[in-house]
Length: 322
Image (cartoon, rainbow, N blue to C red; front, top):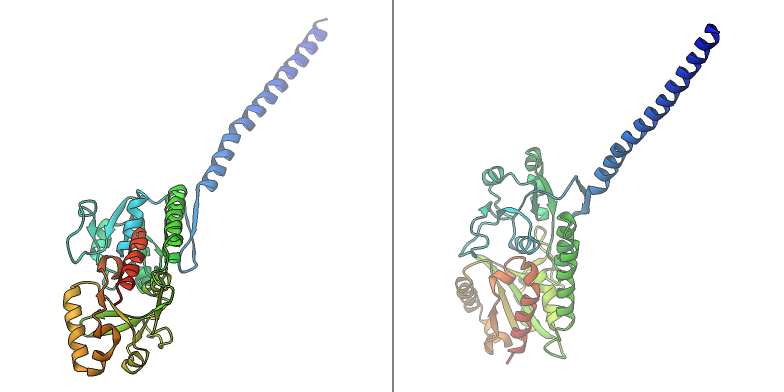
């Protein structure tokens, strides 16, 4: 009897241990499930964007900070509520909204010392910055590229930042507003107004082509770019050298000057240039006083969300043609 009792006891112990093992096994599986879920969440929270260079860039999460080298990108990012720690160096007064943000130079002359100080998670720059990108990325900052050669380009940049900072709804709303305002903006004249767009800087004058932002705005405002077939500059494909002979031949009714700074100085220098060549005086635009200076904050650089305001200024100038 004792042997039978011991045998029964042994069997019962084995059954209990087996049951415990099964329960522990289930518990182990259940404990591992949250880990799998966490991994899935980590993968799905990653943000992948495609910048203006066509490169796909992945971020584990929305960047903590960003620095920019042009005012249009700054305008868009502030509208989306991003943490901007570096902005382009201003040549004049700035708003209170941006005065506390560190200046880091401009697209042509970035201040690498200041960039290292602010050490942003991301730096947004034009394609011309690629030559410096490797040095910046070694410091742990990712570089993304944007462009602004048309209204569509600016809207694509808004979309890019919306994805990057998980503000897709806000970005979509901004783009919808721009699209509606452009569509509702009727052209000033039924017949395109023959126009010459001149980018002016000390000692340099170039014609803006249709593939530039100003050229795109001119077309949408109802102007005809007389320099549309001028050969592109190698280093600045949105611009061309001025051909006085062709300009005189095509006789624009309007001349618009694009400047980055000191608009009055540029206009005076341009008028002096026209004085040297008497043929300029015979242009309809000059004879009728239709030489306009475009506001530098809207045309001297990317205007960002204010691009529709730039379009309205263009239309007003065309409407003023005498």
